[in-house]
Length: 146
Image (cartoon, rainbow, N blue to C red; front, side, top):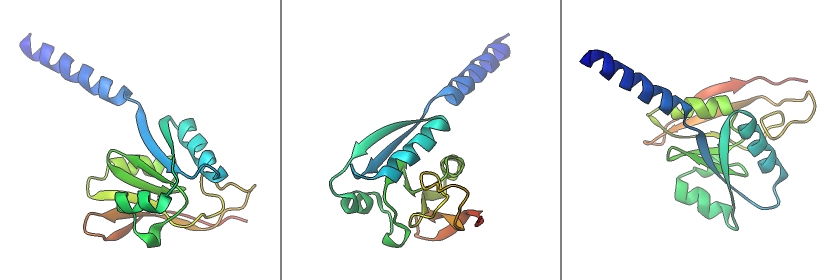
């Protein structure tokens, strides 16, 4: 009986953990429309977004350890990890499940990435993961579409 109670408690704990909301802080400039569109993408995929309007995004990125070469317009933070630019929600979930990574980025502002939709157009782009040692690794590749 004791094992049954422990198993039930573990199951309840796991279910409660799975039901926890996915909360992400997003830092952005007040006048950026694509940043707002990325927030809509995250919310449509089950994230709760804490929206922070910033005056100095360069300082935010520096504080969070976002390398300049991976920069974009907005920066998210989830579980202490940075999410730079138009990273798809699915890749944010992969970042959370990757303990070796300190962040993920979609450098620049590629057309067709979440928040940068322009009809059927899509630029080829990559989602780049960054390790604590500064090593980059391709987490995902999205092909171009015409």
